[in-house]
Image 1: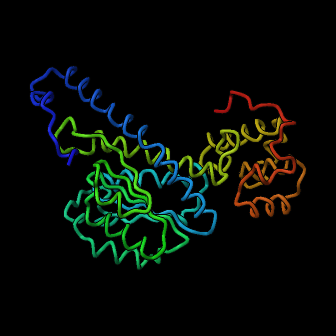
Image 2: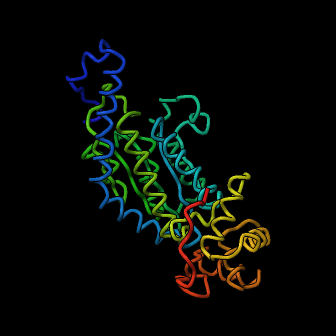
Length: 305
């Protein structure tokens, strides 16, 4: 496997000056960006397929083991605070369970039967999307989860860093992130992990965009969990509607600090109608607004904190 290879140019790196070694590590990370760039066509297909499936009531499930599993969870947990994606529509199948997120349990990645059991217990099926991440693409736990979920009708996506990795063929959509050998031979937490992080960020962000949870580059479903985000929410209402700060603040509070809902209130809808409109289009503000595109409003200001 490429990810297990050894790069001769870094053989003596443990004897190099600190700055030289760090610079070499950084240079080696360039492979991650190049790998994701090359994978964009496959990633685009996966996003479109996932968006089609998740316009219904289904769940997005992340599957992985070791570093890959932890990177996958890191991506998923941001979807609620950033996009308001419901936590009940997120699922994590991690080899070794939640404890493996903070304490390595490397042997758990070989337990394919456990993955099969978890997929069945959670009832994954045709409404759901399962995203499996494995640097080697051979991890038994991740592969078993993907195969089982696919057999049950779920849409399956596999991210791997080795060409011809079995995971890429077992998933309906295989996304190759070909990063090659690492600065430290076999340490896929480095370039391979960086490529996974980039690809997952792109995948989930574009997925949320296509599901209508972004409006004019703004996170209109952000969860206002602190004072900074409350200010940001009010600023987004002003930016989208062009209304006065006091009106934006009032609408934002009446809407339960939901930016999309507040915009519809400023547009002139009452709370019941605004809520119904948003619900009917899955929270997509662009389709919920009385004036599609809302070109009558000024462009948003640049002072959103």
